Length: 394
Image (cartoon, rainbow, N blue to C red):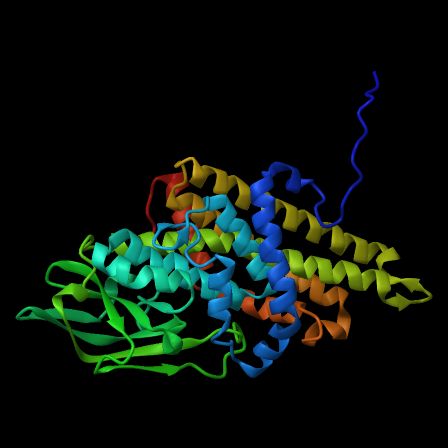
């Protein structure tokens, strides 16, 4: 029995025709962000990576693009769907993990904390400026001795009359030294509370972390809080437990699920193009079986990662997504992206270690992505606990 319906040709960059699963609006958002990355990021990011910097004005451009806090409602935010936000993260990280990190920290950590747990006054003061990229935020949770176990943080806040006195240290903080506002989490007698600490507050200083070999096109800082005095209205009023910071982290991890798929795709596309142009033994290396095997496995992982991200996006839009689902997505997609990057590096040979091509930059960046906002080991334990009913680290 034959069918009269013509089968569409295979598109190497979308092997499983995932594009067909998106709405017109979702494709428009994706294509808009993709064009921005192509025009504004890709031509410059190799230099930013090499020079270990990111232009401050990029935040304003990302604000004008509408991606800062785009999944939040009101206060100048776009109120886009979770899937649309994920597609934006995928395109941003196809450019560079540092660019997606800037957007994730701004929207899913700092802005989400204020939007979800802040007072109306705090929202009005900060969110419109942050959505426009006029103010940059950072998120102070991780400490030198408290990474995977945030409950062991040593930063403390105590009441002093109507004020709060905040003392402690935060480490590995994206956007730290360029932030206008820091969302800092601390133990108090009332539980874990979040505090809004404006830049320039006496006793609050930052210092950048140098000599990084990963996420170089991103500012990473240490926050130092030496008896910082804050007014009563600096505290986020709607939460007094680890539920506060963990809810923010889950939002950011969701973006990473998509972002990792974007980094993998960029590596695959670079390897595919290179393999068709690189001539050895009078033939393009794409014609050799061993290279085709590498490319086939890369295509498989890129498509599988994208489908997983899209499925989680649909679940999130339907209100069915749990944190354990996000852990599986981050665990699977970041590890898959690392495999793709390493295979792509081999296809490119010696050229794979230069910044003329994106692969080594993505490969180095992913070594941070696999660790931050929950290490691969911790996410494996989260998934393991979900499937066995036994929590291994509690």
